[in-house]
Length: 229
Image (cartoon, rainbow, N blue to C red):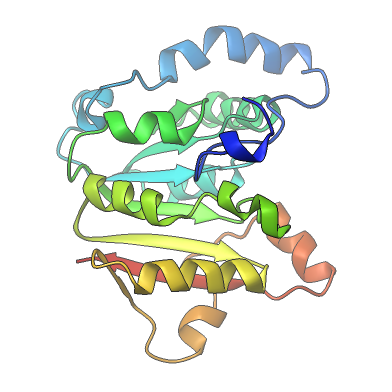
């Protein structure tokens, strides 16, 4: 897709799809393991996990190197996980952990999440994570931000009533951006009752490498939680 402003789609992926050349072991996993774990368009999440159809399904959008997703899969073996990440190098890192740790409760979408969401059935997700997405800080780029009014409508459609949306960022402007859109949405309720509810990490939070870098550089993360009403 062109980087021209007129072609920007809200929430679409605009970053690099590949960085350094993959090491041979990672390239092998992309060729062999990824096809077995890739989410087919139009598939119901429950159908992706034979024998686990009645288990809850959590979605992580933009899992980076996969450390949070893998930690959650370990901590919640009774939950089915779908991870979305179009950056090949990060996706390959997760594949290596999946193979090494024999994680059977993870499936992967390695393209733009805005192509996947419209194909998911209604009310099929029990939790959604959006952790440290690209903030697109320049004013002319902000329409590229993942969280938009349109994306929230689509997320509300695929989330069950009572399902939770978790958004974390170290960019104050993006936190305000998300709050403004979530608070004007009739589909979500902000769960915070006191400041510590967004200053403290989520219970059982394993952290991410990006978060550690942000803290080292003096940026303060915020952790938002919204319930699907």
